[in-house]
Image (cartoon, rainbow, N blue to C red; front, side):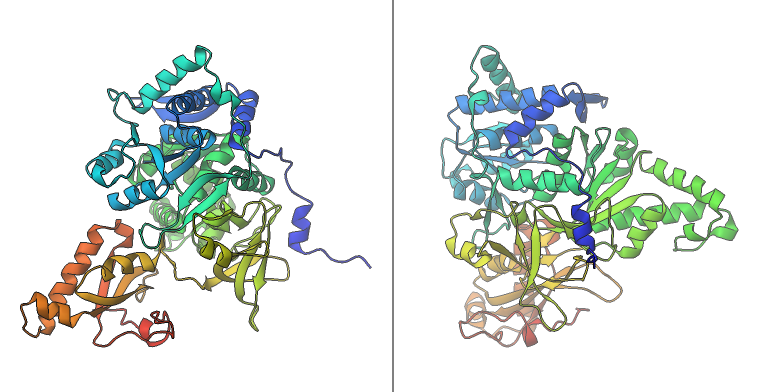
Length: 578
């Protein structure tokens, strides 16, 4: 009797055909050859006119920047890139990762953290926006390499500016200096170095090879068809593997086009200008779009169809549905066909609403350490309350499941990182017998669908998909002599599904007494000093990591036998209304 196949097994028989690539240089040259005169990027010029960059021009620009980097002696060196999403960022990232090892840095980080990552990675050069480079230059004494080259995307007069490097590289290359073409890449060696957290004491560098990312690109292409006519609208930060792999490198592999959002307040305007067909987003953006669509629908419909604060679409007569769908699509630029959602789980009802409007929503699950995608909903199978099915060539299973089938998600595949940068202990903890231990809790149903049920590591994920590492915020708090110890938590308030950062703080009373010249502090004085300390910490962190509330404890935290503060039990009981 023939065995019934699970959905995960059926999926294996449906993959889109892919062409294997194992490194960025081959991928870039292949795309430039196949898609030569097609549009790779749509940009705005100084007069706000939209211009097209062809695949051939994009490849040439990467070659020219790469040629300049080689000429400056940066072959096989670490090269940092920082700044908002832009064409120059994309050119710099590819050039740096082909010439040496690229170190993408979050533009929102505090200057101390940017400098720390430059120092830890031994970066010899940093390309980026003026705003970011200037803040580093203001603290140049902290940069360990005195010969670091700063290459601005904005300044033209600076001899090391992006534009000047491009022009110099072009002259050199056209005059016969073809060292870039001669580069041979080992697809299995470290070429991308990403830091998962912004704290000197807690940052982990994720070491990725080009094969890690290229395998992820072809795996995703196998389950989500990318058309050459597609235009990807890039909103999420490119330093993160989610946007970089799926929103930048995947369309370049596929012959599609890319346009960069000019900022969150320009989303609606840019969508009308660029007419995207694919958008990568986090649940918060999807929810905001949904809210606006429902609001506008109720505004424009005849009174008898209006449903206050609810989606009226399902109750409309069939002839009106078609008109509404067209109107909605036009507000999104007229060509949108799919949202790819990551970083956190979207509301299944919102996903279903978009699908009823003939707009597909595909959510998945991934991690930086997996380059990033592990599971995803696909062109062939979708389950709105699930993170999806394993992507091609990747396996996952549940380690040590409990009676409900919930346990740690572990992953195996060509997308799994090489290890943590100069951190053997953490690498051994995470990579065991070829399996990557994610630190996330989940379960798998009988069809192979993955469900994320929680986290066994302490990372806090906000509603808009930002990762906050409590140890990072605690590091800054505990650095203050007036604070003895702290515990940072993500909390949710009643009728509000956003995650807020709360700090439980045990003050150092002896240090406070000394600060107050020997007198026993009052509750008000302690509160004022701790409040000032929290404000000081917030100034060192990007907005999404700010401590929104704190509680001053009158006794020490419960600790483990190794004197670590317990992240459970009485320690994490919080009055959410404080």
